[in-house]
Length: 181
Image (tube, rainbow, N blue to C red; front, top):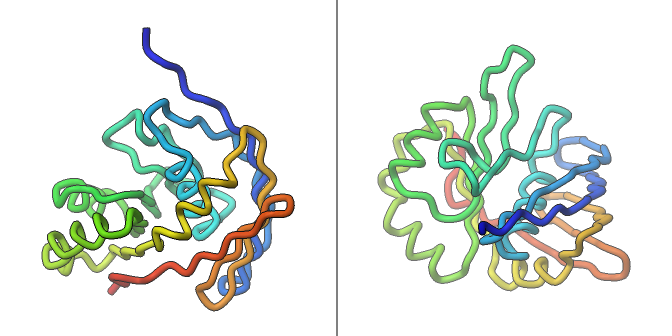
């Protein structure tokens, strides 16, 4: 019998001084049985970094043809594709063909660096792709915040991110490996 996803209730308050975006999102997030706490929290961080009233979590790991997070226009056009991890060249190419913008958040320390060295030349042709690396120490620390019910405050200023939950705080500075255009 297949394991079922674990449901997380998240209240995500985003104060993004860089984009002048201030909103609280109430999310119900399904954590796939194979998903780690680290990946779940990276997903929430990626949501906060791209927060928008039309941004949505998708089925994620349970489907191959959807990103982890997406934003669609009112007409249904795919405006933003947000993916996590270290996808293949083929997945990157397909993602860039399906959406106006693609943002990829890598994590995993040395394995992410090795992956990037392997794929970075093939990504140069995609003007709509941005790639960010999240420091391994920060994502490991983020994983310690995971709980079935979460109330997170995310403050973003000058590219630096502070995530707080109750009396715990984690600082993350995403490193831009490739910017759009």
